[in-house]
Structure formats: C-alpha cells, structure tokens
Image (cartoon, rainbow, N blue to C red; front, side, top):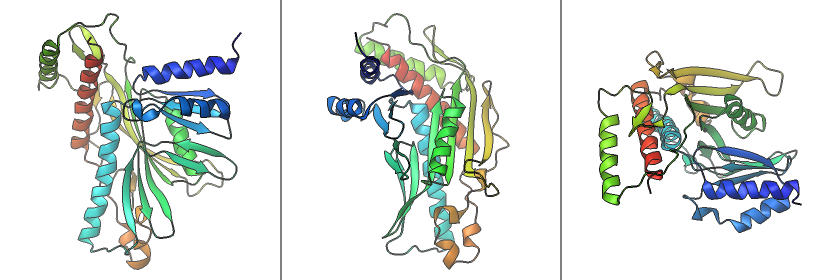
Length: 323
C-alpha cells in the first residue's frame, strides 16, 4: 500500500503535467521528495518554466504555481510598468540623478529565497521593483495577483513579505469570476483553418462596442470567461502605529462589482506611494522630493487592460479546447 507521501507525489506529478492555468496548490512534502521532483521535471520544458515548484524548508510544504492567464500577467505587468515609468518621469522632471552605482529595476515573476534565520522558503511574486547599490539590493514594491484566488491567501502573501522584511509595500490585484471556468465536456473538432476563422469571429464578437464589458464571455454556446463578479486593487503596508508584528495598513479600491465598472472615482495617487519609498536616497539629498506622490494609476487605461486580458484569456481557453 502506498504511503501518504507517495500519494501526494502522484498528485503533484499530475498537477505538473496538466498545468491548468491560474492555480496554486500546497502539499506537505519531505525535502527528499521535493528534490526528487526537481530532478524529475526540468521545469523550462513546461510552458515557459511553468509550473513552478516553491519549497518551504521550515514547514516542509511545497507550493505548485501553474501557468498564469493573460488576465493575471497583463494586469500585473501594467501596474509594475506604470509605477516604474512614473518614477522615471518624476526623476526627469525634478532633475534627480542617482549615484553611479544606484539603480531602480523591475523584474517579472522572480523566484525569491526568504531566509530569516528562523524560517526559510521560496516565494514568487508576479512582479517586483528593487533598488540596488554596490552593497545592497532591496525590494521596494511587490506585485501579487490572483484570479479566482481566496483573498486570505493573497493577504497572507503580503503579510509574509512584510513580516519577514523582504518588502514593505505590496500591491495586491484580485479578479474573481462569478463561476470558476469549466472546459467543454467534449473537445471541439476543427481544422487549423476553421480554428483560425472561429478565433477571428470570436474576437470580433467580444470586442464589439455593443458587447457588455466585464460580463460573461460566451461563444458557440459556451462561457469561456464568466462575469467578473469582483476585481480590486489593494495597497498593503505595515501599520506605522502598530506594536504587533502583523498589523497591516490596507487601502482597498474596488474596480468591478457584479460585472459593473466601479473605477471612475479612483484617483491617480492610489495608495499614496511616495518617491522615497522606492528611492531612499532622494530624501537625504533633495529636501521635500522624497514626499512626492507617484500618480501612477490611470483607471480608464487599466480597465481597458482588464477587459482585453479577459478576452485574451477566453480566446486562449477556446484554443485549448480545440483538437
């Protein structure tokens, strides 16, 4: 009879091979079994290095992160790039020059080892902005996105980044389908030409100005992306007035509720990100410059990115369902 560990290893193998988008799974697993899986699966052979295997040596828990959808990737990339571009614009406007060995950089989906001395584990945010000098490299902004992911799970990631002192400013993005996607019961049989023609028709239908945004995306009698029942962006920091270790200061902004765009009242200075939070040296050399707010959020542009990414995700799901 198989041991519980052997059963879990079989489940993990199945998850790796199917690689269903936008899922995270956790299993208790020995370090020995984790190392065997790492050896067995060369991860860059699966969907541009997905799934990712992240390990927590302290808890002996493996996390499997499957390939992200367009909605997941496009929105996190947009926020990351917008923050970085607006910082660059402020620096040019205010004639701020970094030192010869100082750099502000962005990175997408890095695997980061967190080792506090008491705990050791790997995490993979959807994006990060870091400030680098000759002596140090520190993360200034972490982006964590989730599609139909439990809010507590997203918030727990923010808490880990902050409490274990890897980053003090976390941006959470959450998108929840009314009903989680289910593929058609029967595969769709089409030739390559027929498939291409159907994709063109599908995109034209969904991108039509008359098609209601953020509602269910239906084509050929199947829902390929359900109504966006909830979407929000939340900026999380450690509370400055807290004596505890895990009190968080959270600013949450609704983007979509029950398929209705709620973003019109969101200001550009969302979260009140200050320049000194990303480039600590400016507050020492330029009085008052560090308090400048980074007005990075354009609601109209971001909602358009969400809508186009929903359509892109729906089209990808349709393609996957065709023989």
